[in-house]
Image (tube, rainbow over all chains, first blue to last red):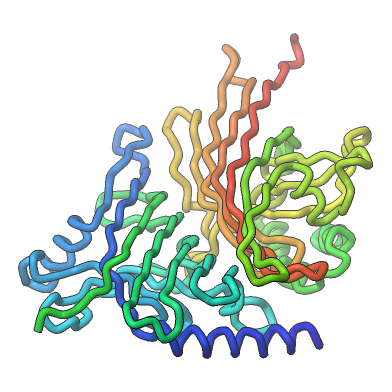
Length: 194
Length: 211
């Protein structure tokens, strides 16, 4: 119980300090994933999802050109973790949230915001996150995120983010269950053009 | 084995983790209700390779290696020198597979560092249908959630690829499993949070009774 209290305090401190430095940071990212599913002949097939396909799909739903959109990694875009979003290039407004990457939940204790490996300067963090999509309220996989963050008070914000995702997609349309292995990389801060 | 006996057995396996057994109880009940026939529960030799990171006393992020011995140590410290070995148990229970530490001589289970369970999906009962199979039955892929001996909620996932070969009579004569996994460990033994990832592999030939 005492350990839990100490950890809780540590998690609050860590969360507070991290939010202070990196709140609302959005990085343009490249996304690529290979998804495997059973095709109509009963064989396991692959299809690729990438930044372009995500932006094209979102643009189609929103009725805009894909050229007006960007895919971003929104650090602490939610109190529960990070978000991968499609945003409008001109004003930065959110068009779609593609994935929610949330801290682990730990039974009967507190949230798992403290489940991260960081250096003392808090300029490097390695964090396991649970992936949530729009098909189920349960998680659909995990992401292992490694991020280099600018030191507190730095005049120039330098970020670098890499992530490996494992997730599944439930059947949709004529496609059955798919298992996906994805990667994200990003280093450029997203700045709306307006 | 009844659900009660199974639960008692699990409590023996997880002596310090009541949350785990509490979490598993409803699942066990469902498993018994489903009257699933005793699965093969084959224990297969497994090889684990990977790495992890943690923060050392000076606040630096340090990397360490991960292998069979380090996985055994998670629930049976020093176990690899006591004649224990790590096995991958197929269909360990109704929810999925397990990585178990067993006594190399007797095969008796010593402890269970990881359970690999099918996803839970709201209002769809469970995630057994979250699988990509080939129609010929030779390949099966799943995303399993990892449960450790530390906490009752999931600590990671493993993308598992199982391949089966059959003899001319249709009996399985070879099982190959590869998996990419990632998990975290909560602070323990004076060490901080650890984030780990790696691969495991199984390549097991099964002799048919006639051979």
